[in-house]
Amino acid sequence: MRSGSFAIILDAAGAVLLCHRTDIDLWNLPGGGVEDGESPWDAAVRETREEVGLEIEIDRLAGVYFKPEVTEIVFSFVARIVGGSPRTSEEADDVRYFPLDAIPANTSRKQLERIHDAVGNPANVVMKEQRGPSSREALTP
Image (tube, rainbow, N blue to C red):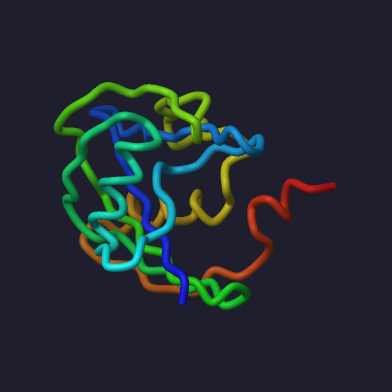
């Protein structure tokens, strides 16, 4: 089974950090695939460093999501910045904070759901299935 891991980083005003992908016109949370022998929380830390140049610490597990169409489990973690500064990379050509009510329309729908779950349920871990097309499929006319 594949697994993915993403970091939800909020600033002091509650805006969320998103990165714009270089391979498709899509905003995402920093994150990606969990490598063999790697924990999901370490994957979120590594992917955030690689994609947006930030060192983070995980505060809590926010959600566990199962995507049955692709047999994938995805972890979302609320994290805080402990070093570095936002930068672009081979995977992200823009990095910005967005207020929750002003997230771009071309943001991954599944990741948008994960952000709202994390913010709306800070005392609980959300566990659910996420069905529907991939972000790439949703953007393809």
